[in-house]
Image 1: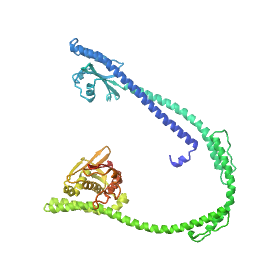
Image 2: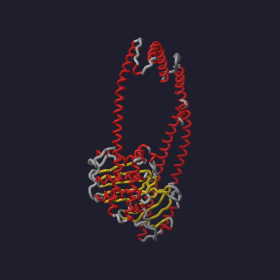
Image 3: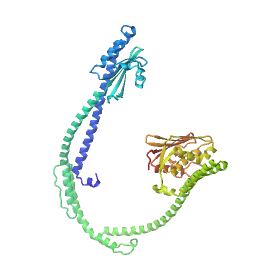
Image 4: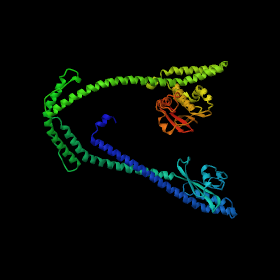
Length: 545
């Protein structure tokens, strides 16, 4: 509903709607719980019947198996007849019945085509390995209903002769549940009708007097203060009416006193309004009652204090503006230096590699392309402030993580090899992410350089990218020094760093955190002191900002 429509609804109507809604919700919850309880009772009853049936049928079947082993009866004949007779019984809703030997081979079945098959499914294997009756629920695709798979061992002492296995359909359970639901709906509708009538009667008894009181209060206004509420009974509503009548009497007494001081207040206001100079130079001097004189003195003292405070405020404001300009310049200088440092590191690496392989034209073209990318990244740093304040300046698009991570690695390859770090990368074939490519480079470069700086030589750097459910996951793990538990909650704060002076500004992880949040992602960190750190970045696969 619109707010205007809600405001126009009467209190009585609101009472009926809220109370009736509460009754409906309560009855729905109670009906649902009752249906669940009935379903559980019926299911336990069918499960108990299945267990009793299994253990009852096991006795004659076991005897027939023993007779066959002793040669007293023809092998298979007696058991097959017994299985067929049981399956045809109408009072038992069987889907199948079979007898398995100790290896899971069918030695008797209501379907002749199943003879000789070996069942090795998980349900059968669990039955074969159990020394007690096993009952498992499954869905029967042929009937569209659930069913119970019941299996009981055919054994005497430690001697296992086989397993009796059959399935009971739960179709009858579903029919009974539907009947319970229909009956519950009918009863609920009847109760709702009765409840609605009761709510209407209650609303007229309790809400109407309140509405009458509200109308009386509405009439009391201005000079009309001679209204009274007609009091009936001794309940809370009557007490409310008495309180209202006493309040009207007190207002009438106070109104006379207010009128006496009204003229003096008008004189005070008029003196201020007649002043044509700046208000901070106004002085009010008026003769009147003690309260008016005190008000004049207080007003004059307040003007003096405001004048002095205004002078100090202007001085402080000027100092704050100067300090803010200095702080902004410092933050911009640190941030720009930090962001330019990463692509410059990659570019220096490219230059060194080009110098070492100058005669290799293909190698030179490849690294010149990377140098061009680095220059373009430095070019976009000028717009970094717009990225921080104007989200529409970014150009997010679908980027392939395999290629993008490869390009990121090439920019920091020199740093990795200089410390003999083992770099391992796992990226799913079609893993992708909706993000501005330069933001992606900045984010991953910050995390990977942090990992490199935290490790000694021969450390291990793992970068993984994969999708799960509706999310794209990026993981950066290292075997470095780890993060102290006391510092974990502060690592994303700007200017917080545990590195030696000159190694970091404390803005890298803060910039990474801002990038992740701007794309609707989440970033988590797991770290153990002395063993390493893992950063986990989670983004919605569908994208988006």
